[in-house]
Length: 511
Image (cartoon, rainbow, N blue to C red; front, side):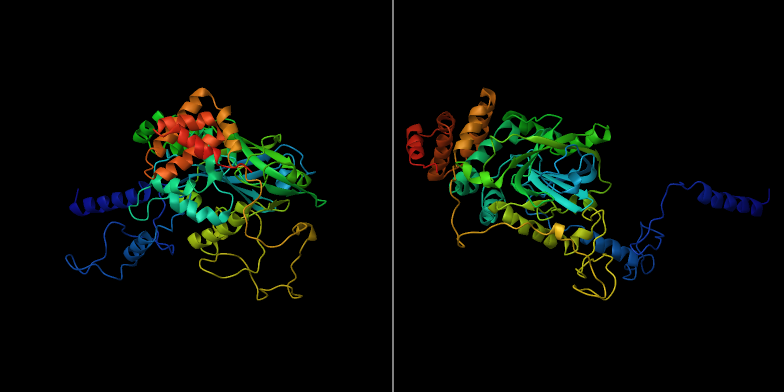
């Protein structure tokens, strides 16, 4: 066969292979403006040995985007894991709230972000730390953000102390390492934290899986029905997988084997079709009963121990996000994101969070963070808010104000905030009926003997790192005040003088 014909056939085969042998599923690589990329392996240069050219726009864009891949890390809850799912309402509670998502049988898409609190992105998930449990409901009335943790209470009762709480528990501003001396220096001046610390150091304080923990909104909220009647409620997610924690001796080994344990467990279950579920329960309190307790029911360091729970629905998680950054990292939660029928209570910690959470998301993601797909409501947004960085909203027209006869916007008085009577003067004082220690003691006495042993083992291990003797004895006196057996065991485990601990505890006043 002539050489010319051979070359011709080779060319035909090459062209045919390019057309037919290329994967039918291979997508064309493009730049951010959509133009196709010809070579993603070699930069454009001035000759074979010349410098790289600034005009190589693909190279420049690729490096620019790489340099900007990170957004500011969350100050708290930086280490997170997300999943999509669905909430199905199962009870008629229209006598309590007008919120449309709670009508029986209504299915509401959700996105859930689990997290640790103090750890940085990429830190071990087996830290002794509360677990974030945040749920974004994409309801027919807009988004409702349920922003909670795996315990029904918190360390502090006033948001003015939150920056100090975080600073004391984050890594040292000098060494960059977490230091129990700093944490317990703060807690020694914060007796209301005794209840939360007691729960945190039990085995359940270190869940072995995000699937095996409950979730709580912590604060009381208000339910408002169609007639304007108000009740206080607390929310509780109960894991249908059961609640399972890790004993102190199990934690270190699990970090060594897999410090992404909780994420891998959740995603492993989702990949197998083993979809985790949680039932949502509420407790209900009439406003007229607020003063009938010997503690303040709106104090977030307290549980409503004598109020029964009522199941109102079930949540199922069934899908892993396609992109970690788009969903889990850019998801933004704020307790101020409420829907008609749900309002904030007067809880002092909640009142601060109502402002702070949305504000921190604006800092991290920009003023238009609600336009990102994971945060965007599943219903149209009609607003005169405009412009700002990365605005991809769909507001049109020159009438960007209200009221207007040129472009009238409807307003429904049914969705106005409820009215509440006010009395007294402005003040800056602590709440009455603090009762800092009793519920901690009640919780300790409810534990099994094994759980009591594990609590003392875990808590004393950190207390033994406290070098300031005054702080150490102050902390021990708090635990002794909660329960004498509890305090005595901790005193023995930390080589402290039990009589001195008891003497300090006797000076503490429960009121």
